[in-house]
Amino acid sequence: MNPHDRRRFLKKVGTFSAAAIFSSLAKPAWSRNLEKALKDAEGIAPDELATEEDFWYYIQQSFTVSPGIINLNNGGVSPAPKTVQDAMKRYYDFSNEAPSYFMWRILDQGREPLRKNLANTAGCSPEEIAMNRNSSEGLETVIFGLPLKAGDEVVAAKQDYPNMINAYKQREIRDGIKVVWINLELPSEDENYLVSQYVNAFTPKTKVVHITHIINWDGQIIPVKKIADEAHRRGIEVVVDGAHSFAHFDFKINDLHCDYFASSLHKWLFAPIGSGMLYVKKDRIKNLYPLFAAGDPKSDDIRKFEALGTRPFFIEQAIGKALEFHEMIGIERKQKRLHYLKNYWMEKVKSLPKVKLNTSLDPRWGCAIGNIGIEGKKPGELDSFLFDKYKIHTVGIEWENIHGVRITPGVYTTLDNLDRLVEGITKFVQS
Image 1 (cartoon, rainbow, N blue to C red):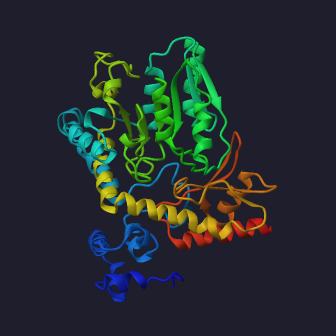
Image 2 (cartoon, helix red, strand yellow):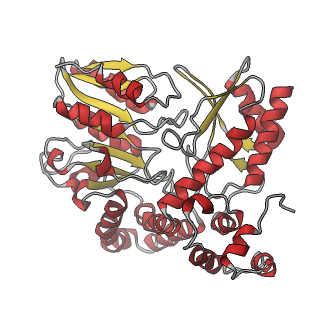
Image 3 (spheres, rainbow, N blue to C red):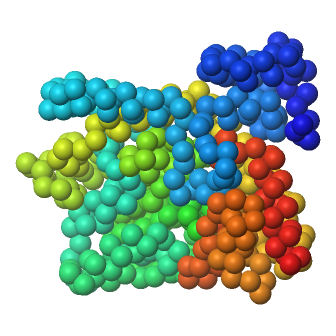
């Protein structure tokens, strides 16, 4: 029997019975049960709903995760809900009936409606959104497409993602630009400190600042808008790595005041693996060269960044189902639940001897991603212990000054899963 109290939600909505809950386990119409739960939750505030296990039970039933492993590395790649999986498989089968016809003449017709729906969720114009495979592809389109010349400076952090770091280093070698690296001491809840680290690195030669919206290693949220505003006052363009932020917590791209933004949709949007999104502010499109050659590289049409050749249309079109699932839950509900799950396990282990929290518990500075270190132990040791003894999948992080195990629940994660995590961490510390 689940030790967590499952009665509060039932009492609030008044339309379920205990019999209905347990009988629903045997019903194939799980989606109808989810629809009913969503309707009955309409009057409950997101903060309160975040702790209602009965509501999230129905969200959990939308996923097909393995019962033999507790996946707490959803920050790497998240599983897609069943509706997204089914759509992708259906489109794949459809494509194979006559690929050149059904892919190019039928499925590809769905790109413009999809672009509009993505833009609506992102809070920008459809004419600023391109679809690709992941955030690395989107960001490298920007990094290699910016018209930088020898002597121009780029400000970036040592805690940024390796693919981006290597892309800038390649431009240093090939074009003679200079990258000014800042080193962030994290976690931090000091906005002035975080902003000043970037701003103090600006010089008259700075042309671009690269900002990771949420640091993938430890879940630190960076105050992008304030840094961007300071950059624009100096004529500096702003590139934002939104791999972990889009569809994770509540914001719109336009809120960030950035010029470029890219995200992997197979993380927090729960889209198929290998789907991504690139945003380029409309007045920046013309002067940004596409990564793959287009007919007119100086065009101001966002579609020039989609000249990828033949690609899996069945993956791209299934993004639409992921958007529907995301909108069905609601970003505020999603954010509150993810933050609640992160804090649930971190609060339980923070007082254990030798445990160091590498992620803020404050919702302004962190959401789902948590990172902890154990004094005297390497991250890989805890990572291996959790999997070998508890079949809990996490990831050990040793990057620059960040050393710990990254633990990332998803919306389908249960409190039972997290209690097992807490038990595992406790046993490791005591061993």
